[in-house]
Amino acid sequence: MYIPYLFAKPFLVMLYRYFVIFFFFLGVGSVPAQVKPPLNTLHYDLEVGSAFSSSPQTPFWLRTNQYGTVPFQNPFFTLRAGLHRDYAEDTDSTTHKRKKVDWGTGTDGVLNLTLPSDKLTEILWPQVYGKIRWGSVELYGGKRRELVGLGDSTLSSGFMAWSGNALPFPKIQLQTIRFIPLKFIKSILAFKVSYAHGWFTVPYIQGAYLHQKTFYIRFGKPHWPIQFYAGLNHQVQWGGHADYLKNSPVAIEGQLPASFRDYISLITGRYPDEYANNRYNSFDGANRIGNHLGSYDFALEWRDTKRTILLYHQHPYEDASGLAFQNFPDGLTGLSLQRFSLDISKNFYLKKITFEYLNTTDQSGEKFNIVSRYQGSDNYFNHSQYVEGWSYQENTIGTPFITPHFTLKDGLNSYYFSNNRVIMGYVGSEWTLFKDITLLTRSSFSHNLGAFGQPFLSPANQFSFLLSTQFKVTQWAGVSVKGSLSFDQGQLFPNTVGGYIGLKKTW
Image (cartoon, rainbow, N blue to C red; front, side, top):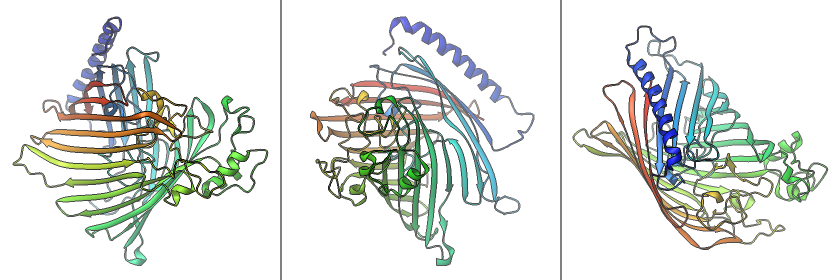
């Protein structure tokens, strides 16, 4: 275990104190309630835990797709608390009428204590939001955990454009919360849309924004066993000012374009009316205003009473070449099988398994040609104006297999995402053991090439694995024990073995 002697004693003292706090609340929650809570849809949770590994860097699968809440360094201790009120059920059990207007809210706080580190403690707020629903339309504001794309939302290695790997940031979003069927064509076609404005609150640039929209369709009536889905998502980083942009060839006096006219231009993704003016220079004129990226998503679903099979593909784009599939076969392809009927005669039962294949090596070719219709060398997630690219608070927003330079053992280059040409295979599975214990596995093997123009001296192969479990403590209502074991082996990350153990209480 990587715990230097000088830090071991204060770490254990702090750990002891928070375990005392946890068990105090555990005891309070175990007392039979005398008064019915005023809102039966209000839920609370409290978790305390600790992680360790054989090296200072936390293993890949212990920290990946955790919405930026798991420290990069370890050992660490974490205390997490949450309060949520979700929407009521779609129909009232007595009147059988749908509740047309409803509201919800959520707040999650995370306290991390990392030893040793320059940043010993941090307080994070991965969720602070309020939402209101009118029928199938929702408006929400704040920070909320979410994924963007079509795929397996629980076992995926990470969606292509928006994976749940980074800390959520503040947005205002208007969306449909489910697919809305078009009844005039007998509900054969349904749609789901969203539109959002967000704020990139990061230290390296100030006043930067996010524009985001999605559009998806479903072909097939709700009761049909086979349904087809297709659509796309579109994200744009835009605006902002920073000292590093002063005297830069990609900005004017350190400021990126942020007028309403610029906003209208980036919404449509078209080139601006002028090649250069007093707000921007030829960089924005030739490349469109802002950092555009997203994915085309396709999925085919087959389901019956016993199982669901989902086949999906997420195709990335960062410019016109990606939109025109010039970067084929890049993207994330997955196959997921979920079983619904639990065989109680078996003590070990597979509930769900997901296979995924990721390829990001084409990128519309190696050469960049500014005068070409399809310029090439897409250089995924990197950007000349936003030096930390498609990241938030140092974590990748999209697929976590496009990795920031500081996570790598070797092969650093001048790009923030110095490894964005990757071939990866992944298997995730969920099992039930003795009906009460849940087991989860994630394993990935990746072949990493670096980036066009700055490749690794030799390809780096990497295997990462996670085994986690969770089971309820029958003596204490709402209490569960969580444990994980993970390791990294290869040339990309430091070789390490680590784990996590925690206790969680829900009310």
